[in-house]
Image (cartoon, rainbow, N blue to C red):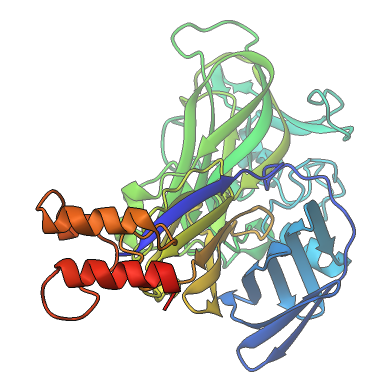
Length: 469
């Protein structure tokens, strides 16, 4: 029977909160096998998980535990623990790679739009709208120096409602294009829209986000208890045509993040998770994202002069491990707060591969990495982790499995205390007198091999003690 002993060692810092030390990381490859050199530590025979053009490797050595992310062996981002200190290594090219997963001009600092419409780059209001009534819409989008607390930026975007012939025109901003085609404010003919066929009003997604976050400030010129809310929606879809609000059910939707109950507030951070489960049956790709912000959740409602300020909008990609299960490894229980485990066992060597471990991460498109290094004779070093889809956030857990050497007992050590002495004689006599059973013996008490335990075995045991022979 194997005996497992578990020792938990909690890391000094969470993987997501690090003070970084400088180090040198080198990666070479031969086919699908990689060699990683961290300072003077060399690790060979590593395999990578591929996510598009990015390779991800989990590393676990007695001195190094880390997750590597790279587009090629010369463009690395590494996070981990080296000789007890957190470290981070990155090249400029690798850092800019992460920006591909974010919203262009999400901080609303760039306002030199090619159309000279006064709209923020990549974002649009009624000045660039299409539809027969676009020229009549009085909702506005502009730049404001009223920015959220703590930002280093100097501008935010502000949308403001207007009125046409007494009908409230909600202030609206989108990264797609607005269409105003119907005098009825609640008609889906009035919407934001996006399609890859219109590239100037298209925003691509490179991975599936888990949430959208922004700083928002909302005021109503005249309080309206019946229609008190502004709204923000983000739709991840396959890049073919989509409009919000919908004019029919769209099957190209992968996920939606919506909040239709944003109350009047001063600057507040708002985070909305994407709902993938409701739209899973669509099997839609996440190639594009349509975002719409409006001064009221109900078209044509609110009051003339309602305003919503938006600042520092971003997509969130999770990369936290939420559970790890292990088969064939007794004594392991996952604890999210414990990143380092040591398990010792006795008995026959176990065989462990990556198939013995299941890793669950909280990111919809998070990359799971597993690496098992066989140290021989049933001992292993195991690295298990996850990396967020944008390659920015990661979490790593390590398991060191040590097989204890087999204990060889001396002939005559009946009770297994690693000493042959009178206590073994007493145990053997009690066996003969039926005061003890064979279950009380660690080694075989039938020393002469006769098939019985009797006085001749006692004589032999005494002779062993006296003469050590």
